[in-house]
View 1: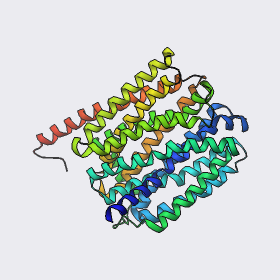
View 2: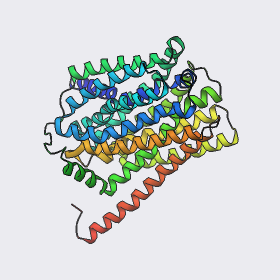
View 3: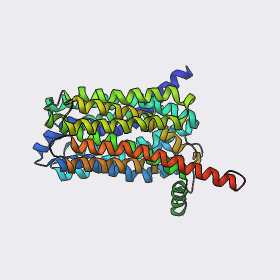
View 4: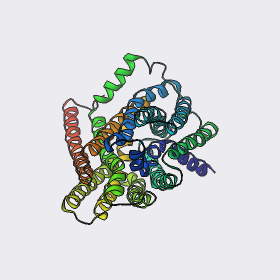
Length: 408
């Protein structure tokens, strides 16, 4: 019975965290039609993705500390309410400029799920168990980006692009009701001073002053940059370059998401035996290799659509290894400010994703070259960040030994 309740809670937390990928992936098959319907260019339409990530990133810096001060549950419910209202407004947007602005507001609500889902896991589980739970959540949550483009393509063909935002509002209502009814408060010791400017700045400075934290944040940010480059460029590359129909787009997207599911499930099975750092290294190696394969296939015109989808699938498998372990390794050492640690990590992750999406859109030339370049750079950066983290941690250990003990 306890195991069933624990599984149900993990599924609910996965649904809460899934606001992020659903809100980006559901309307992907509609991007080319939105481009025509709203008389916008490719870069402007992709701005609805990048601005969403900017809002997501900025809000996390506030939502994490808010939850440290007032608790996870009230902040999460408030965020879901804002998400529902903003989704309805997006469905009614008259033009591309208003839609971009409303996507920023939608992100402010949606990011409460990502920040607080991770923080709740840290509240309820230890460092190593949190990595395992996050990995299993990633496997469940991967169903969201796997199924969202299918549903989005069907809605696009049947009702047009606005119906995707109506579906987002309906999802928000359903998850909000479930959270209200089934998810108890997980932060038993709210920090009354968490929102004081001095305390807030001190928390973030303490986090940034920790070399291991910075290293894990860099790895997660680089990994996510490549993942979001694919999310932002997939519709244009597959639909415009290779002529895939919008309601068939989801099949190719599912193939890639399956890679992430395999990686995150493997992470959940192996992390406790292998350790966080070894899993992160394995994922970074896979991502770097996949980026080189994608770049070579795209520049050489090898494999057609499969020369894109195949390497991206491999890259996402690497993300399934790096992301949950990197998240757990970064947040785990800071139980008293898990919200702030999760928020700062999320800010960095989303900022990197927004930059990657912007570059893919700005450099897009009707081929997959811009996508391949950004994914390859992200894969190389994740491996470089891991190598630098090993060097920095070795230096810190040597310095602590020279002082006669570990650093406080």
